[in-house]
Length: 171
Image (cartoon, rainbow, N blue to C red):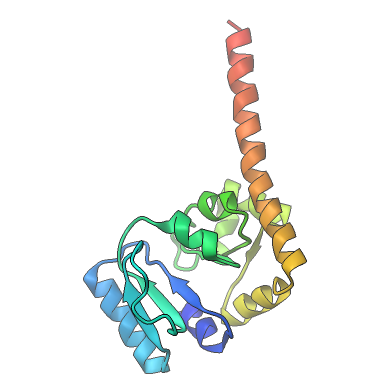
């Protein structure tokens, strides 16, 4: 609901990719969009959205996230609002996209690394979502945050490589 509220106030396009895109989940999102007066369309990547002018795109299938993140200016990664764990931050980070996460991300060690790097921001409601997007409206700020997010992935890969090499050398 925070995302839908922010989407209604945003000048840009919002893409919602439910974690569990069941028909009932999609119907609930479509109903919420209708109640808010949001022009929306439902589609399955890699198909082109049927309504290219829709303010809100709802993805009704699993997969294709990498292609969507490649088009994104900012990504809100789900989980973290309702007591569930935050979903994977690796995909938007790999594409150099700045990331927004809910308050539950504080309990995730990897999410904390993204937050500390400046590649992600924690948001608690639609006002904070809008403020963060506004803060990243300038290309330079958005690019810096995206590079910071990507750097977290690189640090993790480098640490794992060092651990593997040290493990072999210890034998």
